[in-house]
Length: 238
Image (cartoon, rainbow, N blue to C red):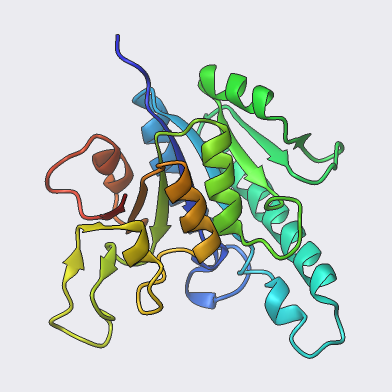
């Protein structure tokens, strides 16, 4: 038997909100949980990072100076914990064994992040949700996702979005937009591309971690991408 695949999937917090733009839509939680369960059933080890933008963004909270940026980012980290707990519940509801590990200690709610423990959970077939970002202000959840992917020796990081991948221009505005199947890390840092923030892309480049960008709302897409199916739609940064 070959080496089992290990992936880290990054979802935005906004995706959980659905059409309302705020809070958590349980139907979306269930859809994501079913997609993750499909991966687990195929012996794929899964880590997850979820943003907190459906509840609060640290940068936005600190915009007018009333709330300090550090405090705003701490609020954003707590928002990711809320989303992580919701995702844990949805996964457990589908019968998946899952753990939440937080970069900030909160023992009454979830485990504290310890890389060795996270790896053991993954080896035992448990999904691990990494909450509270990196635990430090001024770092995005994109950077947290890349960092955790490297720490757990993930084969890839999957940025699950609302579009099929990275286009040469905005597909919502231009009907002739072309999906870019392969990009370099340098390409991905261009202002008009913005796959992830520059810190996370540079970290991925330094560690030769492939970034796959795909549509999270297409049923079966995650499994197809991880299996390398030719008809799967995604962009890869490497």
